[in-house]
Length: 267
Image (cartoon, rainbow, N blue to C red):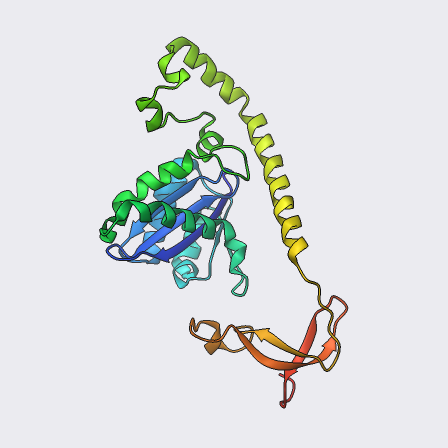
C-alpha cells in the first residue's frame, strides 16, 4: 500500500479560503484541493477521491493537530480503511516539515502568476502542482511523476521546442521504452531511497556543524521557549517567543535541565 506522508491546511489570501495538501513521503507526489470550508466531511471526501480512488489506501496519514483532523468522524473514516492516523507534536510542528516545504513551494509558485488578481489563486493551483510534480526533487534526484508512474511526462516546453523523444517519436519504440521503464522502476525507487538517505544525512551534518553546544550548571539563568507551559501563550501568535528568566535547579545527564522562575517556587 502507498505510504501517505502528510495532510496540512493553510489559509489563502482571499476568495476560497483554505487549501488542503497531501504529500507522499517517498515519491514527493502532491495532491491539493481548495476548499471554501474546512470540515471533517470535506477532508474525508478529499482523502477518498484524491488519494484512495487514485492511488490506493495509504498505510498512514500524518497530520497537524487541527481539530478538523481530530474529529471522531475522521478517525472512524481512517479506521474503516485500516489507515493509521498520526499527529505531529504540538511543540514540534517541524515533524511535518515536508508539507511545510510544499506549502511554501505552492505559495511561491502562485504569487508570480497573480499580479494584482489575488482572488484568482485557485485557478493557478493546477499549473503550480504540475510544475512541482514534473520538477526533479533534490532529495530523490527524480521527479515525483517518474517515481509515481515509472516514466517522465511530456511537458509543455517540449511541445514548443521539440525534444528528441518528441521529434523522433516512434509508437513501437515508445511502447518498448515504457516497458523497460516499468521493469527498471524498482531500481529507480531504490536509487531514490538511497539518495534520500544521503540527502538527509547531509542536511543533518550541515545543521550539526552550526549547533553551538552549551553546558549549564545549577544557578544559571536561562530563558525557556514560550508555549512549553501555559495554554494561553501556546496559541498566542503575538506572545513573546521566550519566557523567564529561570534559575537552573537541576542538570540531567543528557544536558536537559529543570528550572524555576527567578524569585518563584519550582513550577
